[in-house]
Image (cartoon, rainbow, N blue to C red; front, top):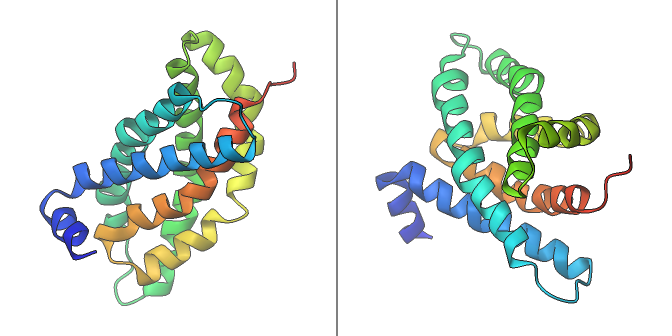
Length: 175
């Protein structure tokens, strides 16, 4: 763990990107094992790795460093955390969910308009599902976790979320 800690402090964004991509790929592999796929769909796993590495983590990094870290009430940690979680779940979470779904479909080879139509069919339900656990995770994150580790905590939780997302987005969408 000290090795990861060292590279995380020396190269924070690339380290978070690589670890998140690996965790996302692991979530997809786990899902494929649960689905009892006859063959491992490595392209599907590569899409989840690419999505987490090159979209999700860079966007999360900007959101956390440029927006959330600047929100604070002087001498009132409770209000600060509450406001951060509220804004994260009300503003950022719906947008990142749409971005993830759109980018996933584009990586699958769909056009922007096709990706948008597919995203519209799944976005709301996935967003509601995320609200059942992400606010609690973010409260823990903002109260107890140092800023450099916050995205990593989210990505470890995301192993299970990515498994769920993989399962929900890779089955046939009813018309």
